[in-house]
Structure formats: structure tokens, C-alpha cells
Length: 468
Image (cartoon, rainbow, N blue to C red):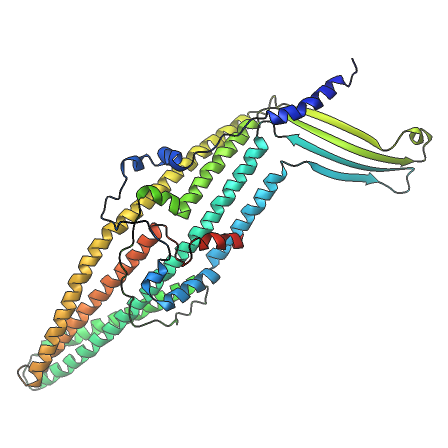
């Protein structure tokens, strides 16, 4: 038998080996992933707290009917620094996919030697590792999963920035309204101090009454200073989200938007499919699953083939007699025997990484479910408090009008009217606070439900594709 027969047999067996190569296992997904990572969902088909029926919807920003808010969110999406960084991360992950996919293709190159020597050589060669056990395919698939996870991170970051912008806008309006109400109350208190001073001067009231009135005024002026600082800081926080210089001078509007109807909440099982942060976590489970497969395959033999065409030009007599170009086809077989435990440890590492990714997915999903339940529970509480405080404001306005009528006919003094006006201002401030808190909680619920803030369905996915 020719000495080249074993090599020929190996080369002929390579295509068969490729066709019979190890098929990669599929990572857990969908219901299978939920059963492994979030088993508590199995016994909770509906929300524990009262929820509006129907599928959770997108385009939640438009429900507030605030044109300025929509403009600010678009500005934040376009200029926010965190989003720009997330978009770069998507590009990096996409490049890594191309790097890992290249391992499935042959490597080709050329090398040569020329100069004043008697021999010139030019060689073209190619080599290819046959992915018999799926090591390279698993790495490539893991890179694709990591890219999808990074892309979903970007989509989630867009929604977080949109929600943060809305909450910062509502906080700015709240603080501006509270500052205005505090100034009204202080102006009323100044009038009370003036009237009290006149009463003390004519002996109709003791000095302590004037001291008490002045102390109340000082406390109100101090509250105004705190309110000014809070409004300025809220403006700076919003400007930072918008990518602007934090000068604290952004203009606001006089009123908070009306509360839209409660959103539909869908079902708990659907939440893990709607939220991009949960989808990103699921992709990381898949990536860890494939990296474990790749590490396990790395412990098995590797088979490669290589081919080369070499041309030689030489003034040496013997080389001139040789036929050129020279061609060659080779196969190689490498089996790890002893690596100091590295390959086994690497497989153990990615096995632990897979378990960690599965636990992280479960934790993220459970936290998301908790956010929705907390938001649903808060909805009814805030709605009830808003009704009560609105009734208090309405009744205070009635009392002010009656006090004005009595003061107009001389049936009561001005102090009673001023105190009723202060009570109305205090009631209005409480109402502003609960309305702003309710809006803040509503934004948190909308974000927790995983809806897109934009008008068009699928717009986030399109934007992520452009960013990458």
C-alpha cells in the first residue's frame, strides 16, 4: 500500500465527517425557559391586584395629550448620552458576530519571497477547520445571542429614557406649581402680619400674636427658598436627560396633564415577552448555553484541511528541473491529551455561567412582575386620594367665596377671609402633590408593562436596526 493511502482515506472521510457532525442543542426558550427560571408563573395566570382587561398597548406617551412632553422625549432620545453609548455597544456586538462567523469559513493567504537572491517563491494557501463537534458554530451562535441581548438593552434604554424624561417633566411642573402656591401663601401671611401689627398697635391683640404671625411668615419664606432650589434641580435633571447644559432654566407649563384612563395590563405570562430587558436576559441565557456547548466541544479532537499552490523561480539547476507550480492538500488531526485541567475548568466555568444567566433571568422576571403588581396596587389608592383632595379643594373654594361675601357686608373681619384663602392654598398644594405622585406612578406602571412610548408599532426595533 502507498504511504499516502492513510492521508487519502482521511481526506475522503472529511466530507462524511462534516455531514455527520455533532448537531447543536437548542437553548431553552419561551414556555420552557419560563418553567425553569420563573416557576411561580405556573400558578398565577392573572394579576393579584385589580387590572384593566385587555392586551397592554404601545404609544403610551400620546395618552397624556402633552405636545411639549412629546417634543422633550424626542429630544432626549436623539441626544441622551447613555443612549448614544448603548448604540455603540450594539455596533460592537454586531462586529463580534462577524468575527465569530469568520471561524466557519476557510482562511486564505499568500506569501512570497523576492529580491536579489537566486530563488523567488510565491505561495497561495488556504486552511479550514472542520467544525465537527460544533465548537465554532456554538461560539458564533453565542455571539449572535449576545448581539440580540445588546440590541434589546438599547431598546429598553430608549424606553427608560422616555419614562425618565416624562417623570422629570412632571416633577418640574409640580415644583413650579408648589413654589407658586407658597408665594401666594406668603403674600397672604404678609397681609395677616400687617393686620396683626395694627391690632397690636391699638391694643386689640397681644404682642405674642404678632410674633407668631411673623414666625409663620419666616417659615413660609424658608419654604419658598427650598422650593426654588427644588425647581432648579428638577430643571437641571431634565436638561441632563435631554443632553443639554444643566443651567436649570428650562421653561415649564402652568398645569399638570390630565390623568389618562388606566392602561390595560395584559397577562403576567405575556410580560416576559413584551419587555426588552427580559428578552435581553433570555438571550444571555442562550449565549451562556452555547458557550458551554463550545467549551465542551473544545475537549474533543479537531480536524483541519489545508491546500497550497507554490510557484518557484530559481537559477539553481536542480530547482529548474522541478515542475512548478507545486500543489499540495493536507489534513491534520489534533486531540488534546493534557492541558493542565484548563479545558475541563473552562467547561465548568461556562456551565456555571449558564446557571447564573438562568437565575438572573428569573430574578429580572420576578422583579418585573413585582413592579407591575406594585403599580396596579398604587393605581386605586392614588385615584381615591385624588378624589378626596379634589373634594377638599372644591369645598375650600366654597368657604372662600362665602368668607368674601361675609367680609363684603362687614359680617366678618378680613383675617377670617385670609385664613380661608390660606387653607385653600394648602389644599391645592396637597392636590398638586398627589396628582404628580399619581402621574409618576403611572409612568412607572407603563414602563413596567413593557409598552413602547412611540406611536408606531415596532418603531423601537427599527431604530435599533438603524443604530446598529
